[in-house]
Image 1 (tube, rainbow, N blue to C red):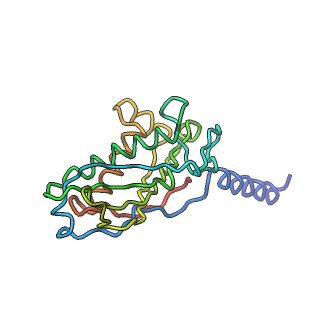
Image 2: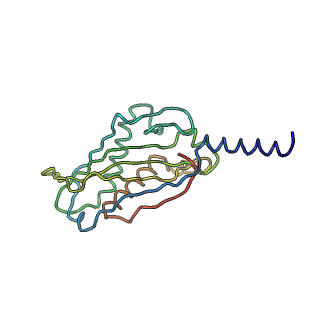
Image 3: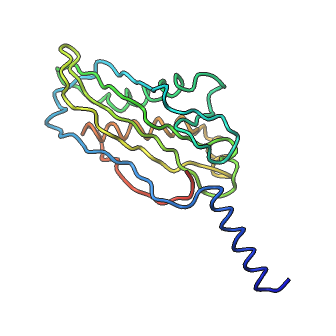
Length: 206
């Protein structure tokens, strides 16, 4: 086989591999922050999380399942309920800084919760993204008045794979703890009770 032919085949193989694992892309944590003067008078009364059954769940043992919900760290079971619990805990943590007099409820609807599969985590390279997307609105707990209409929030963060993942697990850092922390910081930033958590990064993965 000629060197030219061999190089062409190698290039094609590389492109095919890149397509299989997902090409590099731009990801972000994005929201329109509320004003501190608006949220300063609020006190968190409750968080209500909806995970619509119209979202597609995948249990495929592949690198990048095509689905809205991909979650593996909890035992096999109701993924909708598992995602709802994670998001409830994260949003409650992020909104703990609300210390005003007016009780409010944060209503959240999850639109995407795409973490890494075990197969993707085993790749020995730095790649992969946790895609967490949702809408959130704020309502008065007493009257039901909508104080902030449903607004889209993206909370995407780099995942860990390969040796980085194995080292993190030894330290007790999991997908769940990473996602919970990131969503909490994102919500705090959105509510203007914590640092602005918006940002953008480039990475290979979903």
